[in-house]
Image (cartoon, rainbow, N blue to C red; front, side, top):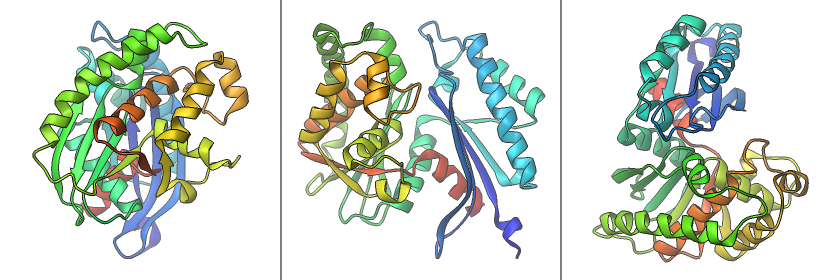
Length: 314
């Protein structure tokens, strides 16, 4: 079998970011990456009416057209692709318009997944990168939703829950200024804690002794990158890295006193995430508090990698 025939492609169409991955996977060798890119398109912007904005659709379709050219460069056929759309498209009243526009303009076939399938794919990706004994609570903080995925030491999925409180939704609902208003933050935290009480109650019936929280997606990887002290982002360094609640809270405190421009200047934060990082860290810190954990592990791998592994398995 040639290398080319083992190649697979995956795209994660999120509420804030669209990410492409081209590579090959086998249980023996793991994931070998040939191309990896990401673009912030804010597809889930202003979705309080449940409607994807035309300009957000246009931005996203332009990125997906670029990604289709990447797939063509690697001569990847459609059956070797796994194009996944999550919370924003899932909850949009005009999701069919988006799917059809992508199909017509790029030739890519988008698969909209429910929360359970999103959780399964995220777990596939994270468990390929982070090995830890005991049960793991994988937390995928997205733009539209947060996925909570409990897996055992053998990576069997025990329980999952999707909650519509992603960073784009929270930011648009609560945060209006930078530097941060303490009142706005406390209102957001109260909302988050109310949601988390229900989540914890669901998961409390499982064995949470020696539980490890493993965070994936932009909030967690940004925090890990900043706390690592490294200028260049390294997935190899991020995978399995441990961050303490204390250090993460100090990072949040510094961000809170800054304008959006100052955040980008002071820290290696991806452009397009500087306004969302407050909501993301609020989620991460309060999830740890809810599950009585003083640290979390981080995975650079997540849904996108899981989608590629899933495509390879098929």
